[in-house]
Image (tube, rainbow, N blue to C red):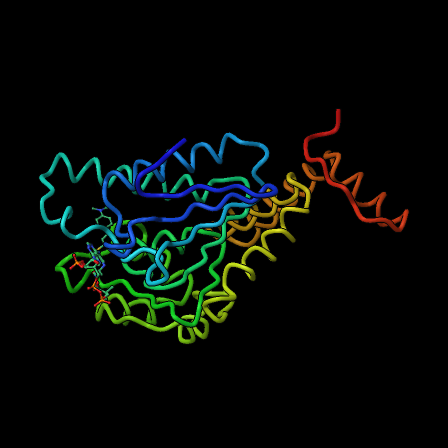
Length: 263
Ligand code: DAK
């Protein structure tokens, strides 16, 4: 597959999608969103992919939001296509059965922050900056910003950022819990890849079950969440990975997870 606005690379089960419109700070236009959706779909259908990483080209931005030039020209019908395309790819990201890491190397604004927040977690470079500036355009976030940001940092802190459109730097994002780790810009991808490799070596079934238990559990009461975890645990026990993981421990060797259910 070849694309005009993204780069897709796979190494040892880790696929990296790089947003690649550096002249427009990787802003999301319709063509980029369509290509991104296609690439995420390919990842979803490829059993060999164990971890997905998202990042931005050009060293200045992850994604500086929706393409404002295009946004300004949308009529109602085109706006609907733009909305659906963006929302469906963001939903697809959260539903992927594998870990997804956002490697934020610069501006993650508007739709860019929303994509990053839909990933499982974010690593950022010291040069990163985050914000939901839609209010300054007379808009509000449209890809989940009013919902995910308060869930991550709390309603009051989220409202301050959403009402002012203020940009925050990586260290503040770290303190707020938006990002898991901040690195020197040149160390970002190595750190991300080290964590990706660590996760890629885990069992596919237990990774998927963990992700689903956390994601579904966040939207329900604790008792229901615990039931979701119990069912997910039972599923793992039926997998060859659980047999391999426990046997490897008892035999004092490294587990070699193959994924898949017991025959
Ligand atoms: N769109 C288009 N072009 C952009 C852009 C963007 N979002 N951000 C930057 N660029 C372009 C600039 O226009 C400039 O192009 P040239 O003038 O060189 O041709 C080039 O990238 C470099 O940018 P600057 O010269 O401005 O660079 P600076 O370092 O001075 O400033 C900046 C960087 C990131 C602070 C600044 O560019 C900026 O404020 N950019 C806009 C950020 C922004 O407001 N982002 C939020 C967009 S709104 C929806 C769902 C979601 C959304 C909408 C609808 N539905 C469900 C309906 C999402 C909305 C958004 O994301």
